[in-house]
Image (cartoon, rainbow, N blue to C red; front, side):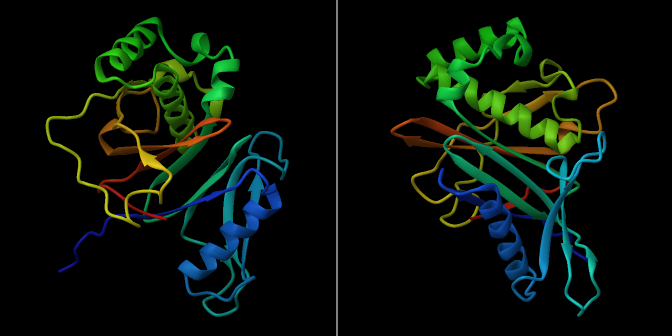
Length: 242
């Protein structure tokens, strides 16, 4: 009897000093090790479906290893960079994957409220932060970061209206499982953030809220708080590995 297995998602973070090439190398090396392929046999590339450029767009992992045959790998990958560092994820068995990384400092400077949230959402975030003793800027940054991760998973990016994604962050009736060290969490000093849930999507969206799993993590630095978000579309709750 075949038993369905949850998707596996491997996460990686890097320091602000890491370059874009460093991030690509980290993803390629980690993917090769996940698949037990020789180092140097995995390549990460980008292809923009709109303009055809290769310096941006949806990333893809390919193997140059002659063993099982070269070509596209059955993995999903997503990357994000901000002033405070980089964040990437590789998933096996997921229908869609999106990640994002933002800093509270950048969000405080950017006039995103009118394009990211409805008036009702902004009021909910303010009330929620006060009721649960969570920093309002951190909560707003987490909500925006999760929306960007969702738009990446949908394959639209900011071509879709972020305000059409409706989030709630109150815990569901059943408490979430306790994260285990090394699994379902990022190593300290990253900390799990209160759970978000997707309640509504734009009409015609390929994202199904009932199959969308969201996680967010925070890290406090001298230059502000970083928020990392993961959006995985799958039937079973994914296992996150650092």
